[in-house]
Image (cartoon, rainbow, N blue to C red; front, side, top):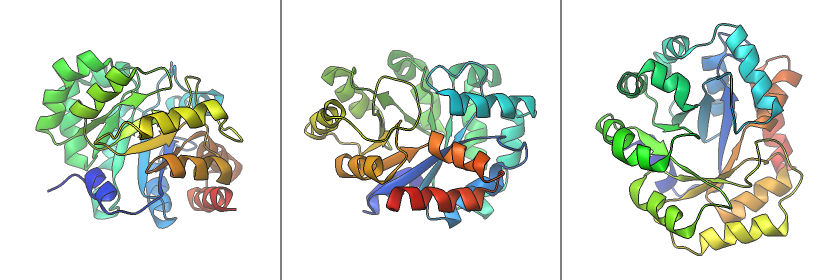
Length: 259
């Protein structure tokens, strides 16, 4: 069966909306409820964050969510247990996003096998070096039909972008800036030029733009320069503001990016 990520991008639907949340936040058992609420709310793809004590790429909103989740007992084992049976209820692509340390403690092959068993379509590991991915991680992920999504930033060289495009599948995660995650009001000229430069490269893989998308202006800008946008901090903030009600948070998010 073709991977759900590829099916989504080949469907021609644009712009796509992918939403990130941290597993175990705001409550330990809320993972499946949040995923279902996002799908019902019209979101196209979900990134489930694996909480980690030292999330280098994340801003204060997601760091705080990870801390709360870890204190609540969220772990890789608990997350995999919660996701068992998710495919009976949810159709959209699901991606796990996490740092190398907890994944390595779990064991890469075990991780890929469990992802395949519960119906995870792809993984994003921000601190996985590209060379290590090619040599050690890709063969195992490929054997389980799991897409490893790589990130590019305004600092990524054209040569590296082309290597990533040639050796990955699914989509490329375009980080809007070299800074940490967090909401921004608009994308400046420099970011726009970076989006356009990558667009002009004629890459094989579709792109999704993430980091700093929180309103209609940033969402529309991302949609104009890629297949769609990834939103994290804004949704995590809305989750806490809605007393942990994911349906309410999903409605608030869709309202924020369309009005």
